[in-house]
Amino acid sequence: MRTCLFPVVVATSILSGAASAGAQQASGSCSAGFTPLQPGGARPSFSCAVIDVPGATGSNGRGTLANGINDRSQIVGSYTDAAQKWHGFLRTNAQFIPIDVPNADRTEVWGINSRTQIVGSYVVNGQPHGFLLQDGRFTTLDPPGATSSSAYGINDLGQIVGRYTDAAGTHGFLWTHGRFNTLDTSALTGINRIAQVVGSRGASPYHVRLGADGSVSLLDFPVGGLGLPATTHGASTIAARWWAGLA
Image (cartoon, rainbow, N blue to C red; front, side, top):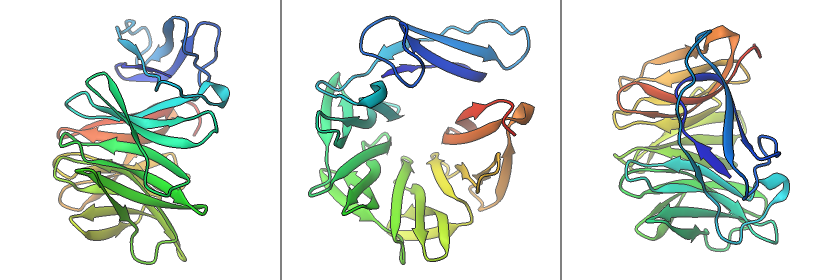
């Protein structure tokens, strides 16, 4: 996998040699194609780093996926082995540390904060559950009544966001030191240090931001695009995936 950092753009594709986006290989140069947000905008500079867990394999070149990074440049993500089983990983000080929930059939890691608290999801008997990894101990995060759950983001206060499914449908959740709050969203994917939250609502191209005061606002991505907020930092900066012309 190749990870590149870009300023705000309309569309981004990452290529490796002759491979297509989504099928990056371990060899070859890393380049990117993009369309600036404003017509005639200058080509931005970017850095590109190869992240491949040793021994990772996978179909379509997706052996290693980097999903989160903290202020200490620690990176978390997931990878598949030769048996096509998913594992989580933490990359710190140029070393890869595997993350596997005990007795799980599958483990994926989605987020990390600056205290190296890690969140993700694991599967047992086909059933996904969210988890928190802290000081070497796993804690399952299943809201009351949930039939499945996933944890996607954690801030430096230890607040966690994610999604869960129950008999009534799919919801977003905010977990604060043992207490779950359900929010009227399809998923919550990121939370910053002042408890601003981003996520999605249904199949709409509009997506939600929850303020620290509990207010909910919709994010309307420009040019009729479809946006998927991934995380939020500082007071208001939001990172997202965004496709133009799909509304």
